[in-house]
Image (cartoon, rainbow, N blue to C red; front, top):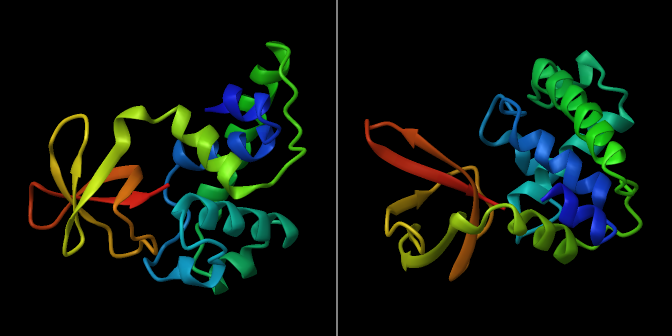
Length: 167
């Protein structure tokens, strides 16, 4: 995902998204992300918008508290971004984003998640194209569609029931 993003001119965004995906949850309330919606097609783009806003606010603890964002998660994301950027630089990839086209960013992300494609079965349920597993769309997700890519799959209550958020 990161290397594909660098090749497509959206390396910094791909790195930020990889860091977000590999860190703990950024929001402390499921409805907190609604204030940062920039895309009806991608929950990850909405998380990226949240992260960029936190950056603008200089990761202020007060801003985090007001927006239900975990300061510890932001710190973890920042550390991972630094780490991933150094690794990509050492490999000779240009990390700076020259484009912020959502479709290119999503394409780069999808290159790293080929096993996370799901087809709609209706009523908020989707079936994995690779495993056949049936999963319900997470309530914090703003994305709907016939064919979607999951960002993360989580187990929720009742035990054994699984949900996902969308790329």
